[in-house]
Length: 149
Image (cartoon, rainbow, N blue to C red; front, side, top):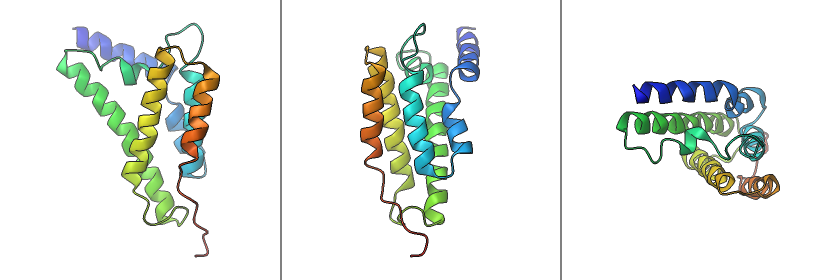
């Protein structure tokens, strides 16, 4: 029963507070633009006043002893990384990123930055600090490859 209630609360949270990464993936023209938008929105979403800092999906299931809840949370985080990797692979295939770019590792990197930003927000990091973290992370993005190469 507790797991069902928790899963319902995650669904409500997802409908009301999350989804910005999915929108960025759908609306932005490149993987880099989608990741940039996502990280920039993370800084805003995770530091909104009137709500706990961070991301419920990232942090809520980490300290549970309920294996069902922990597995569901892990599945959601993995699905995000998989969606990021798929978008990155699309840009590799289109010649927008170097062919030696490891899409899975780059996606995992972005997810790890998001997780760190979530914990930072929970620990009281200011929005401006998280915005700087996002910009620093984006500096590591692989150099774009000209389409005519």
